[in-house]
Image (cartoon, rainbow, N blue to C red):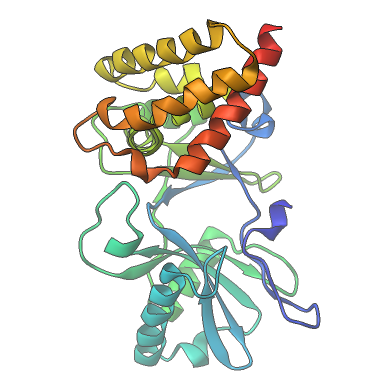
Length: 303
């Protein structure tokens, strides 16, 4: 399943593009917890706040897809960029047929939480040989970037993971997403995101989902960790929201009656966090499904 995020086959089952296997945030998965990280050397590269483009050659044509679609707005934008770029720099003569090139699509249309300005460009973040499945080293990426006239993600040189953790906790860094660490011993790749970027992510989730975000965080066992990263004034509001949720759960009635009372919080989302919040960011049916899942799990744990 980890290999299937954006992998491309043709209708005969031939492997056409081999992108990154799924990888996780620091502390998100068992293999990315501090005590389980490999010893030995690693390479750290900048992580960019855009959409990943998977670029490959097929039947003499260069194609870019995102991990979910050949026709998504991001894929269409990425194809426009490479069409302009390879015509200008002769990519067809320089692009190896067995290459899967992985590049972040940076543009206003792909902006998530950071603003990189009005330019539209690609940033190389990795590459694979689809015949051997071998991943390109950073020096090989630089050679490839030079040949294709395309920028490669910046490399960070530090001595330890602890030093990296200190850096990403620094509140002065407000315009960066984070870094990707690839350990040389086994190829494990781990995302390390700046505390300030995580705050933007969590605030965006709260703005879009309101009470449903808190219920999802609780279901995933992440509520306490996320609150620890948010500003005190926001946590005060969240604690009030969480108290309202638990009051409903402590009230009388069967689970169905309780989740129907949780449904009423949908219309309260707009008044919880800021004047820009709006409950329509999350569909009412989705909100209700989260309420049901939360209520069932919460009731089981209380029993």
